Image (cartoon, rainbow, N blue to C red; front, side, top):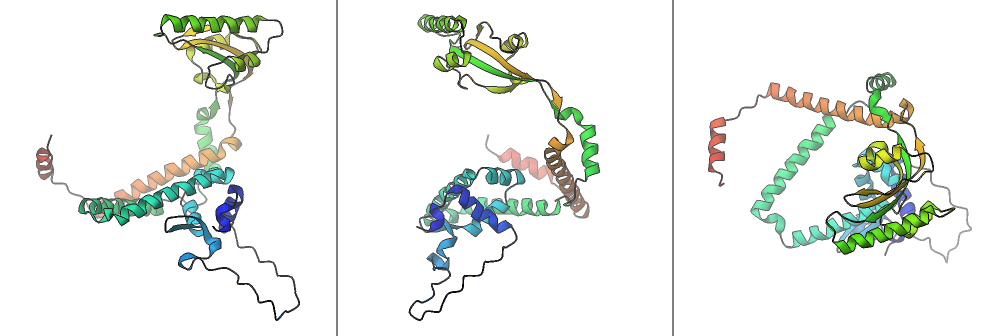
Length: 324
């Protein structure tokens, strides 16, 4: 097994992404006295299919994935996906494993000559043609590198300022006791008993809400949903939260799924994100919209030069012959 295959994900990510930076000058080796009895080791050891062992990141069956292949894979990703992998190198390991899964299935499919079956070959040709069209359209509809300019960003931000409003947020503690409305009597009684015990603990002097929540809670969030936007809170609970003072605990709230008790830990007022904070998101959106407009314009120009025609009668006859 090559050294690259056992490399930690962070180091592996760094070794792959270094390929996108300008090449660094190699340090000069330290001068050593010549020795006739000690031959110089080779710079790289030859591996399978002529590839050096240092290049191989992973393999499955007779297929290898090299660092250069992963660099190409990374380069083909969108900016958001690239940023996510750089921030969380474990995602790169997941991507490699997904590629290995594809490789082993591909090997089986080719070994069984699946791709040579007529109907499969026809579908593959359609996929190939669509891929060519999509990649070509992407190449001719890519906005200029300097778009959008600072002035264009500012104008777009001013015209859509309401889209950057962050609603009021609440930091909550949450206790949930499950009791679906269609539950049998025994389940209801058990839930009510649990609820009574929780309420008794909360009313005790010096009660720690989060300690009680962690001890007897069926909430998926473990009792700590964190900061929640106003619109994400269920209406029946939101009205109770609105009436709470900071640090206060609500009475039990009976809903269709069971009983809820919430504590208001803190509140953040609504605010409008400044351009500096929204810049990257806005620029990506503007570039995507410009690319879409360029694509439409390019296709329309092609159709002007090469008008399309559809035989509607033949099309109707074709549809009529399709089994229903």
